[in-house]
Length: 420
Image (cartoon, rainbow, N blue to C red):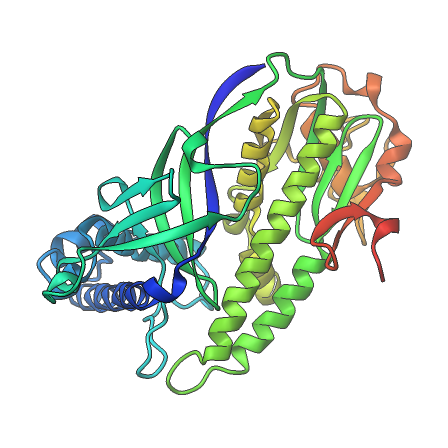
């Protein structure tokens, strides 16, 4: 086994919540106020010179602002960095229906924003499971106020302790809708196999089927039904409750719940994919990277909205770091360059007409019958396998094993094990 240092986020419950909730609330509200000041500054500059300032410019503009001093300086920097990143993400969508990042305000109320403390803003005591979080200058003004928030915590995992990690990079206070919790972003050392497996796998990421995996003599299909159902339900809940003063509390709940459920789905899905590959002695995974898909063509109003909801980059990142823990290499494949969805994995014929409706792929040249997503996944696998036909079973390309997300357990299991 070989050691490897990786970055992980460990979640923890705050055990002295009643003692620190007021201070965490004040910092969460302060982060929202600073976000709103930054948002107003962007509007002012944008209207004046048709330029959207980035995070560094925002920090330069606002470092002397009174709201900047509500938080530790590094925490304030992170709030403005998040705002800058949100504008970059919105701009790169190039979606006329998408609104730019808005103000964090519901009428006269501000939500509790996440607050981040970097290395100079916290001090960790792993012996007694405590962390000291520095307050902003304005929060220390009272003669009776402490200069820090002392949180006691319990990790939400049984197999990790903070004293076993290499280092803690940042600490985040996150409001989960009911209470504050802490997220520790850590560098940790893990053991990985020195000799990777000899087999290869190809993965195609999509919308109807979130992932299609080809292992040569076996294929796995991961439908995205649960993800689509959540997107439809919570988007309706969000849009139907927005009023004149902006999003309502229920709309904010819908957004946060959808985000948490999507994040859990992607973690569960990527975990199962990597476990299935590791169990089959896979050493290399080739994953399609549809990096320019949003720019390639107009998919129509409905299609563009579904594409916007498609978190393929997050899923790809989850697969990469989970595979890394198992000693499996992941290679990103440019789908557009290889034309994986149009090309027959058996004979190499490229034709749009081979893709038939409902995901069926029929090659007019060699009569290959396959699921179109699995055909693309096998084309991915061919980029890391010299002679894929030698270990390929064409029959399994048409009849994959289906694995579904079971909402009752929050895990991915074979289709026959899912409770209706």
